[in-house]
Image 1 (cartoon, rainbow, N blue to C red):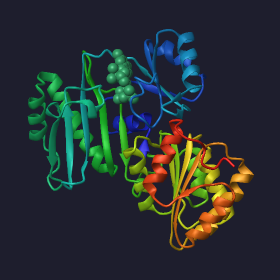
Image 2: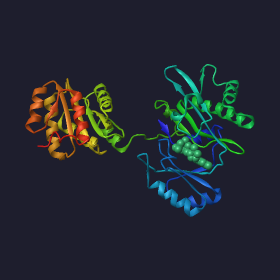
Image 3: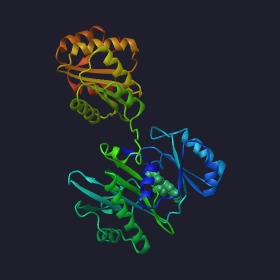
Length: 377
Ligand code: GDP
Ligand code: MN
């Protein structure tokens, strides 16, 4: 479970990691007074994705009316597809330099790893590997002060900058352990004229352990509204940011379909493992969910085992009529009763494919305008 920046920072603050003075707002009440008391402020949209700065999710203000209108602007906007419901307003800090610090688990090494870099403030994936210091931590020994001194030396930090950064590292490790975190990240850890402090905070905690920290760590809903609806219907559904809505029947075939789409030059808008649901009602509910994020086309990939192709075909024909589908739909149908299923679709003028490659390249050619809608009847 990901925590919002303001939650991570509250945990940091309680555990001795310096953070800028700030307060959380869900409307404009109190914004003017807070700005007047604080002076120059940073107004930060609280969404569960990084890169808010570049996406316009962070604004600055130096007078009350400006702070109010920027809060209103952010609360009315979406950052990287997420509606902003909360903003964190903080004193604007004077940045001398930006560092990077994170602790996570290296799954392949089965060890905790601390990552540190002097290239802070950038997306860490973009930082050249040689500029990122990786220090594995033996969990039976923990992070020792001598190790933090070695890290700051490697980073080229000196004096109080080094000393304060070492303190943050030790406390960050304590936070990581204490809250069963999977990730704690400070990017940037800023050096100001007087302090080293966490200007940003990211924290992911183990879902299964989160209940142990209630109410200190509140439950954070990470699913979108549509994902929640799918959840209620017992359908595994995930939203992505590509073009094609994907429905398949099984986790493996679903992943393979996404890979093929990518391989042939497209990408999925969302995907759904429809499992064994081939009844008309289940298919209708599934398709409605897929359509709710406006994909440019649909790709249905059914390998019928227990699922019977004729059931899927009948359900699809009904749903297509009821929903009056306008977008291109490509169906690949093989397995139990496939001849019957194919015949039912053909009667309605809907072409289906046996080869998944053909189906995938067909949907892509339809997207690129290189063909006609396969089911225009
Ligand atoms: P992110 O883009 O979601 O990672 O959000 P951050 O909180 O990391 O902010 C992005 C960038 O905005 C930082 O790297 C800083 O350069 C800048 N920034 C954020 N807060 C402040 C602040 O209080 N003062 C100054 N001068 N810059 C800030
Ligand atoms: Mn950041």
